Image (cartoon, rainbow, N blue to C red; front, side, top):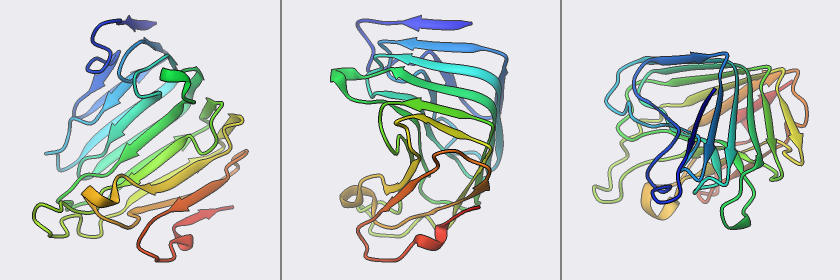
Length: 212
């Protein structure tokens, strides 16, 4: 078990920070008064890397951003989570409900990304607490640098527990990073896998979710 508790620098410190290829297995990871429990956003210059998390419980207790696993995917990311419990039952900075898994893509994309969840459980008192966030471009340049590269997400036999009824496809911040949806979600055998697509470009992205 790994645990970190911080009362003075919770804005900056997480229990575990992933960078490039890495894996954990058969661990309980707890973050108390931290930024996130796990922060996974340090491979922005990668052209392909793997993330494997298996048979783990990731639990937050009053994290700063009310998020268990906060992430950003670099180019060619190939991530797999199997038998993982994302436990947000005790998270809530300023009494806000927890996001169990929040991820955004990155700019200047050249390769698609893949995230697979197998038999995972997302526990929270917040609906749509799994967030797949699109970053489309930098307004400072005005150029579309995301190159329409998708992040493909697969959900197999997962459960959204408590009032945690599913996930959301949403823009990170349309006024800063641009509009649209660069995610595609597929899978089968999930429980309470409701979803919502929230964008501001007036386009229909309903075909981006295909759950049997």
